Length: 332
Image 1: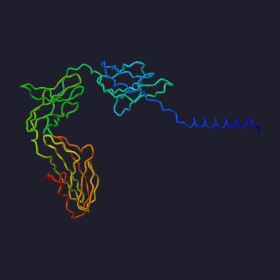
Image 2: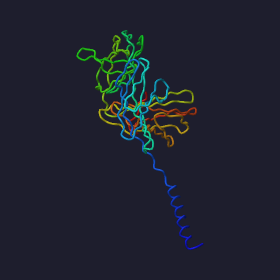
Image 3: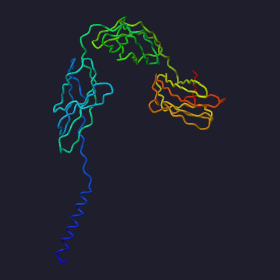
Image 4: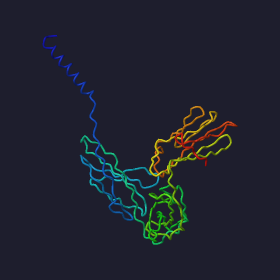
């Protein structure tokens, strides 16, 4: 090897090392485009829906419009648009369609497609109709608390379909719309404790035709309680039993958080499944800790949990249920 060869070889070796280092470096991840605005229906007819959405900043090639147009149908690509509007035509009257939008990036721009926008549910206009639904059945009230109640009705029919129900109450002697839902279960909120309410139900169809009023139902909201309360029930069948516990917060302003219910459960009893809570044991003492979604009970609210178990013959039933270990539960 002569004196000129060594520097050359060293240079080649360094180049290989540099090349290997560059090749080993991770590629820079592309940036997703911003999420488009939720599509808004700007024009709806019996057979078409026009939607628009807020534009996305960045190198946008076009937008993919996705739709759901039937039960159990997944999102699928409907069309592509280079503008921020699209008209979906050839539709069925009085049918529900759901839309969302995705922004697509220009090639080699360093960006990728966006996340899907929020979705919008749109119903096409119905065919002309002047026949109202029939009179709903007499409603009934349940889950009545200090500040809320649920009204249920059924039995109304229509030549097309019943689109929903209005609960009405009298205001200055006039029956006035109060709350509505697309099914026969309507939720009333912001009620006054220890107050009597009389309501009726009116059915309506997609054209807005209304039925005659149902017969009225009267209910009284619960009175304010000084502390939260609870009640428990036990249903026995053979060697098995099911326990259900309801915790109520009928206070004026107390927010019940991270509550527990303790009780005695014989060590010989074998726990089965539980719902809305986790049951732990230490000897014959058990503690039910609520699932996160029922761990907070606001004033006027309630939560129910339960579990099943198997007991040997002669084993006493669970007992001494108490909310937070201090408030005894009433046996229902």
